[in-house]
Image (cartoon, rainbow, N blue to C red):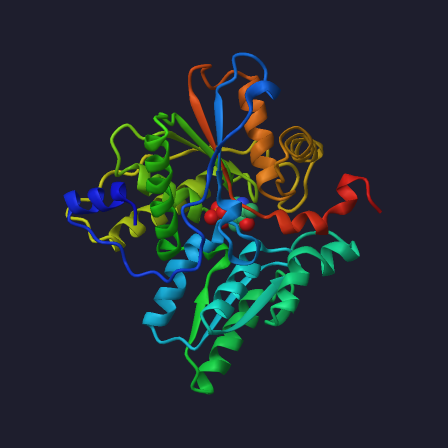
Length: 344
Ligand SMILES: *Cc1c(COP(=O)(O)O)cnc(C)c1O
């Protein structure tokens, strides 16, 4: 735990629940060369949570540190989770379970309308396979009943399953992003940089909620911009964020809980559906790859970076301001989306 978080917990009488060590932390905070942005653009940093280590990294590693500790605490002998066929969360959950010697089974839901062989077998799906998890394939309609059934079955066999919700998003999972919020601000302080804005991709809302909760414990926090990539229902997202943030802070056992500052939620970069990159997303992935040598993913960070480029073009940020793009990972999915980049 960094000094900034330790101090915030000490002054408020809180403490961090236990976590297991799975991620490479702190992740780097890199300054982007501004020469590729229009004049008047803000200073842009990238918080490299694609570099958390755990089986090619990504934001789920931070959540899983707390989720696996919770599973251990509950004496679970098997963890189960669920996600899309190209889920980064499922890949990292399998890796986390393997790293901590826990049995693991996953439910892969056929929820994204993509028929290519690469989508169905490559990228994250291939990594799931080589890490050797038992995979239950299911449709959107039968996923929740299949999970319930399997949980009952395991209990009958006197196993102790621990179910991790999709995206690892829960009050426990969000603790990882309370830690990240403080880690980021401490790094910025050490660089003598004032962070004005943080922008990132949001789907199951655990990342957004953790950051919002962390920032609400600070004086003069940055504004948080959450780019929705899995739905354009902002009121549902706002409710989920409020709920996770509030309950995640409660897990810190603070004497007084602050009011949560809601992030600004954007639906303009969502496109047509979760898992379907539009032309702007592909353009953003290419821009970052060709101009910056920075690999983004087609499902999450590509959409969020398209949002960043658009907000910069619209002068939403001041020329003297600093924006941090949180790179949440997902790069293995590129191999499942080759055809979006002109490959057949
Ligand atoms: C899961 C994921 C997100 C979204 O995080 P949530 O906490 O589910 O909102 C963003 N980027 C990548 C690469 C992810 O895998």
